[in-house]
Length: 296
Figure 1 (tube, rainbow, N blue to C red):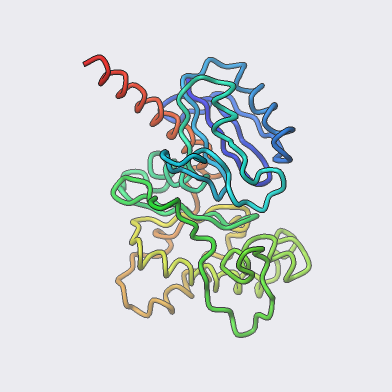
Figure 2: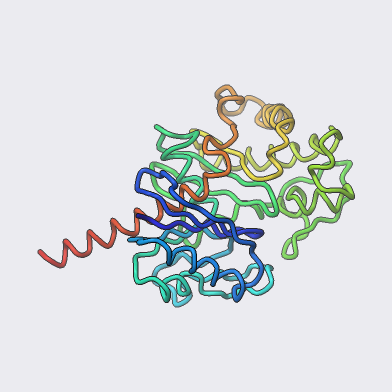
């Protein structure tokens, strides 16, 4: 039995399941402050006999195993969670291996193993919702180095007709500042779900998404691009993304059929929690390897 936590900016999804990714029990808990959210998380897992836990968390987070702040949520603007030791809180309650990565990296892992990218060895998962983030797998391995990717904060060219200042508290008009859900709401004066019948809203959104995808595709060359998150529930965005991306690429790179290449998650809203189960399985496997090495 494996435990999984998808720690999001609005809610924590907690689940238990097996190494095949089958979810057997789950719960959603509002993300308020650690003092309120974490006791509910711990109580859920205490009902189950788990061997490892995987955490896919909103960021930025420290995933460097050699760092003194490994396991921490770091410079998030979310009140109460800045410099919070998420892994440490889980390990204090459960003496089991804990896998830790970003929520979007976890989602990419879930989609590669069991979703839209199954059978491939690379993919990119991008979520567009309260924030924007992306995770990538290249040759079967999650992309990380100095830290994890922060693809939501790249700079994009402003649309000539867009005078909105931007919402990001760090960079103002980066991709997240111009195209995440809160930016849509502030620019247009209503939540995205209330703007479904306004084509100009989604055409502008597609313009920014396509710019980002062009950069990611040119740098990472993923075999599949998966777009998730609440904003992408507006399926009318996809044709406009395909149109703008085709124009921007200008035949520089040979592209596959975009309707099959840039797709919705195969696991729907379960990509992140399924990938977190995979992180738990990886953590358990690493422990078993260490124990076998010590026996030799």
